[in-house]
Length: 156
Image (cartoon, rainbow, N blue to C red; front, top):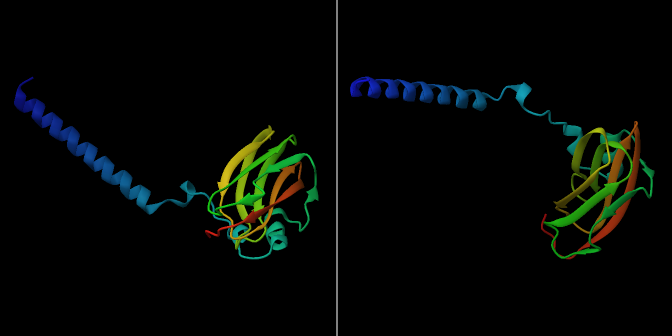
């Protein structure tokens, strides 16, 4: 192929690439509702822990169990990164983590598939010293365990 033809083909490919890039960017900018996860506003309302349980779980008092292990430091020196681990032998389909005294108590929610036996580790922010609640759902029933964490320096 002559050099002029090659340059013209490369320019055409470049133009097509740029046009497709702009079109893709425009589509992402418009954000079709089907591509974005639904925001459930009632889950993240400010309120008490009982109200958060009612909004998210549909009950104010999940059943307490010793089958959930919630591990967190007894004293957190910095509330901006408190390490928390949740482990259970319950074959759960949903997993939640609540912090009693945060403005919005629900801090973590996870949908599990196939009756998973969950283990999660994450860092969370805490407003002040309070109880943490790990809640799992199995067959429509909610089970919970709690642990208290004292916060020395507030970051929220």
